[in-house]
Image (cartoon, rainbow, N blue to C red; front, top):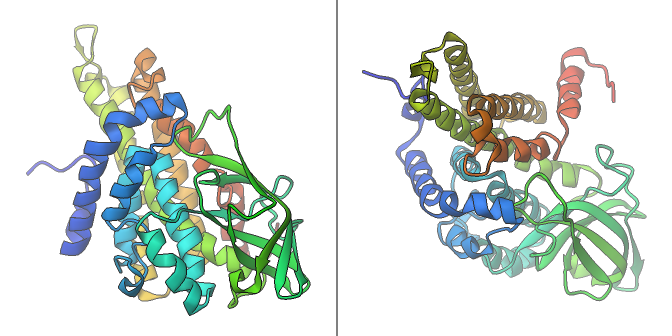
Length: 387
């Protein structure tokens, strides 16, 4: 029996019926709704907002949160498969779902009050309330502890001042989860984006994540009541806990991008005739394609085991760092090699490798650069902090 080139170890057989059903549904959505338009969206620098209602109706927003809040209540592996299939379409689509689910809905669920959960989560699951996550600052980058955005008490309210940078969904969001320094340490706030003094400025001239909204946020004496503060967390463990959830999804997403590039390069190599034989008949090309298949297989096994650890409640942040480091590096290398196999045709958005390669330049940087994740693993194996 012939093996599936994109699943040489039959990893799909390790999935439950529900996990396979989730993957198949999202794969159909990507094939039918995302792939026909995403090349043009990337070229135009346009996020396809028209897809939000359908994404929500499929239960993809906050998919791992409990059903009592209007969410799907899926397990971690199912969420990973959602990310994989969405990023097979485009990193920008996966980023939208990842930010909404892991960086905005998760902190409200994990750190918020029951009133906040009831107020926001059902509407966010329906796609009626879009969130963005305000942690990164213009000067901060990989050092979130060096946070300048501040929140000070004023009676029963908080006054927020500062700025955030590289914020996905910033100009389409109705709320922002904002992390700020207070006299009691870093705290999180649910800030309505129509609050006086709040401003979002979309970042243009991007060569990556062009089918995604990226913004700078500004806070000029933005007043929010104490009821908008996330009451159950203090310090960096709050935002870092959110990032662990999002990074987990990122370990799966680039597998989809890599599969898309590998599949297109393989089909092109079999059909392209050079020197009276298919390009795929050359040993150099077969070696490249075989290496792509090897690396995709290893990444699939890594993320599946990570998902099983997550569902067992034993996943550690270092394990997430190792998987993000490995899988994003895998995907960006495959995207570049696939672009090379396509030759001149590979530089256009009519083919996916150049788009994925450019997107993955952001994915390998955001939510912890490759170097940061290498140092997290290095700290784990040596016991010495080299940051």
